[in-house]
Amino acid sequence: MPASRSVPTAPVIARELDRLTIPTQQKKLPSTFLQSFCVKERLKDLSVDRLPEINPSLDCACTKALTIAERTAVKLANDALSVFSRLAYLIEHDNPALRSMMLQMWDSGAWKWMLFLYNSGMDLNESISNDSESERIPLTRQVVTVAIVDALVGCSDSDTLGKRLIRVPDIVALTARLWVEDLPIPGRVSMVHKELTFAVYHIMSDSQDDTALSSLMDAVDGGADTIISAASNHLRRLGASTPLVLKDLNSQLQFMQFITKKPALRDAMHRGDTLSIALSVIAALTKNSVKIPTAHEMVVSCMDSILLPHLLSGADVKPLIQSINDGLLRTIYDARVAFDRYEECCGALEEVLIQIVGPSLVFRSVLHAVERSENKTNFFASYRSGKSEFGEWETLHEVYQQMVRFKHSLDEHPEPCGFMDCQTNEVDMVIKLQRCAKCQYEKYCSQECQKQDWPRHKLYCRREDAGGTSRPFCTAKMH
Image 1 (cartoon, rainbow, N blue to C red):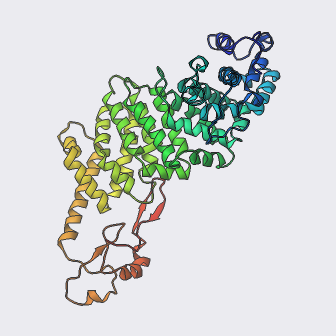
Image 2 (image 1 turned 120 degrees about the vertical axis):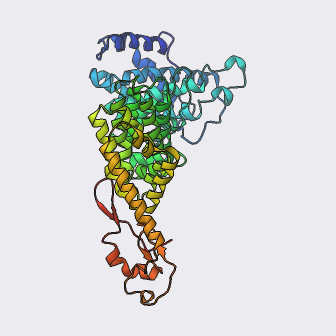
Image 3 (image 1 turned 180 degrees about the vertical axis):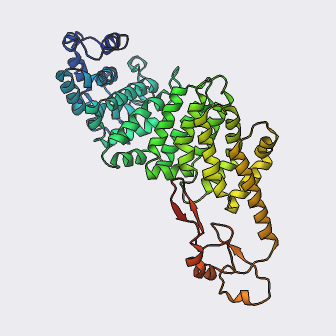
């Protein structure tokens, strides 16, 4: 049965908690609080024996018709969840009685109520309680979502409850779904995604293996791709917001740097548009360089967390080529001009040109991308006509011109097959050759010749990745 009417309502308890812990930043509750406000009795509304369905599932909604008592229990549980979430923030700083009570409530049904409210209670007024206007439950999808999100974040913030949370795959999956869905809450833009980013971070960092990560990815359609897309889209929104909120932007960059250390998520990032979004964020910071004194620090963070580690960390140079097509060099040049006074920022921008773009010009596909980008955005023309002298841009321009001339010389003069023992090299005839699919420079008359020449060609058909380790860059394919 629901708690007695003599017990203070959950909103009353929540308001008292706010008064005690928010204005004064008090971390320890008064010793009489739990007793005087009958908190334990109120939290009993989250007991499993009050659930309309004893074993709620994340993927199976409750379809039974609720009685009036069950509808009341749903309303009281949602209110009690708001109290539970506020107490979760204090569990590490308070007395053992609170810790024991919270763990008991978690184990006795709090997490099951979260599942029920998410899957069956999100649309209660549209499904299982619409038979009578007088019996409608005063809950909306947004109200229920806020209660669940607050509880999940509160549990994640607690070391004690956080360990309980990651042991329940359905709760980990629930966190992922809410985080990806990012239900709009009136007056609180991206509240769900922003708050649950904290919970996702703790779930992934507190898990001893990749079990929690697997639960996160399995919970949403698209798996790792959807997880990365959700994080990248939030970064996009933060970069496009007016005004820019640097604290939120920096937190999101740090989060993305953390999750892309996981191989599955890093590979998904290369398939998505995260690098392009990072460029748009740098462009926005450059545009606001005068208004935002610390914009250069955010550019460095964006470079260090996304661009520098991942432009060449994939299996090939496609991420770099796509970034060049998306305006990488124009963005880098504009940022270099805007933040010329800041040594660290200039150093990060220079590293992209000297360590990544310049050496990669040996690949025809990268050289073609730079040519197309220059024709479209004129970054080299802007540098040559500008008053500033940037050594890295002078070096890049010289290397670019050398590689263009080298490419033209190769195209204009017929060459023999790259395999020196090929019989076609002994006759005076023109043979149609195909380029190595990776380095784009060595040519062969057939795949057989390429395979036989591999012991020699592999010594220089390679590239340096973002981590500084060599990797063969030739395969037995040609085009």
